[in-house]
Image 1 (spheres, helix red, strand yellow):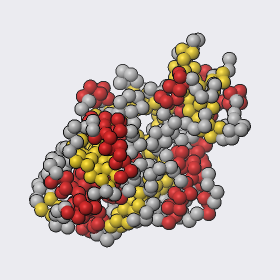
Image 2: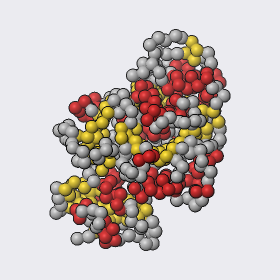
Image 3: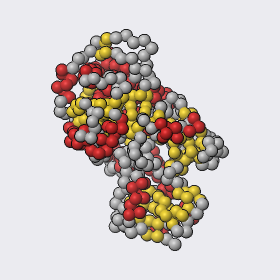
Image 4: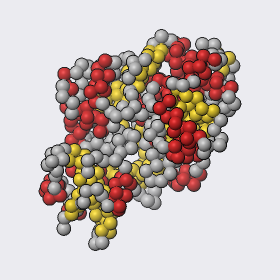
Length: 525
C-alpha cells in the first residue's frame, strides 16, 4: 500500500484500523461472506477500499459530504462503508427493506450526493433517484463496481479527518414518527470498540465474530468493530429470512468465537434438534440485545450453550450503541437485568424533573460520555429535547437494585396508565412468556371507558389449534402480578410485527386494534 501525505494531529478512524492490519497482517482473513464463502484478506480489502474512496473523491465527493450505502449483507457492502470514511465523507447506511419513497426521504434528509447500492436494491434506488435532485452518482455492487475499482487510483491519500467529525448518520427505526439521523463520530465508534473490548475482557485469542443482524443496523455495524480493532475475522451472514440450521452450521464451520443475535433468533437456535451435538467449542461469548428477552428464554440459552458466556447488551443507536452489559458470571444471579454501565458510559436514573430517583424506584435512564452521539442530523429542536439537562434521554424506564444492576421495565412511550396505575409492559410480557401455550407475546394499552387504558395481550400461540384463553392467562398471572397489571383483553395472531432487529412494532399493533384486529379480541370483565 502506497501512502501519500503527512497529516499531523490527525484523529484515528475505522479506516485507519483496517489500514493498520493490512500492513501488519496483510494475509490474515478480515471478512468472510458466509453465503458464498468468499474470503477477503486485510490487504485485499484495503486495496479495494482505497480504490473506491479515490473514485468518490474523483467524482467530487468532498469531506463532510454524505454518501448513502444500501444493499444486502456482503463483504463489498462493508468495504463500501469504510471507503466512504476513507474519502472523508459521512456514510449513511440505508435499510434495504425500504420502498422508493422511504429511500428518497433518507437521501433527501441526509443530503446524499452519491449512493453505493447492490443489484438487489438497484430498482428501488432508481425509482427514488427521480425525487432526489442532489444525487450525482450511483455505483452498483454486482454491476459496475468491479470495473470502477479496476480503473481507480490505488494510492492511499491520507486526509485530515478529525476524530470528532461525523462518521455515520444512522437513521432510527421511526416507530414514533419520521426517522431521525443519529450522528455518530469516529471517536464515538472507535471508543465504543475499545470500551467493549476492555469491558468484556478482550478477545482472549483469535477473534471470529458473527452477528445475525443486517449491516445497516447499529448492531451489525458496531458489532464487528471490536473484532476489527483486534485484527480478527468478521463473518457476514446472508440477508433475508433467518435460517437457524444454516446459522449453526456457520458457527461450527467458521469456528466462531463470539456472536450476537436478537432474542427471536436465539430462541430459534435453541429449539433446533441436535444443537447440543454441534461442535461449538470455539464459541466463548454469545450476546443478545436489540429487543427484550424473557427469563424463560435466558434460562434456555444458558442451558443450551453451557460453555459460552451469555452476555446481555443493552443500549440504543444514539449511544453507539451499548451502554450496559450483564456479564456471564451474573447471568443467573441477576437474571433479567441488563447489567451495569460499560466503560466510558455515565448513567443516572431520573424523574421528569431530572431528579435522581431512589434505588428500587422506576425512572428514565439517561446517559453522557464519549459514546453518545453528537446530535440528530439537521434537527436542532429534537437534539435539544434529547439532551435536556445535559444528559441524553433514552426513553427507557428502569430500576436499579441495591447492587447497582439495572432492570428495564418499559419504554416510556409504551407504559400503560390504567386507572392511575402505571403498568410496565416488559414485566407483564415476561410473565406471559412463561405460559406453556404462548410462543410470543406483546402487551399494549387500548382505550377503556372506565380505566382510560387497559392492557391487551397480543399472543402468538405455540399451537394454533390449541391457543390459550384469557382465563388461562389470567390464572397463570394471578400469583405473579397484581390484578390491575393482568391483561383484560386478548388478541390471537399468527406473528407479531417486528422491525429488522426483531423489536416488536407496537405502533402497528395499536393501529390494528383501532382499525379492528383480524381476530376479534377476547375480553374479561
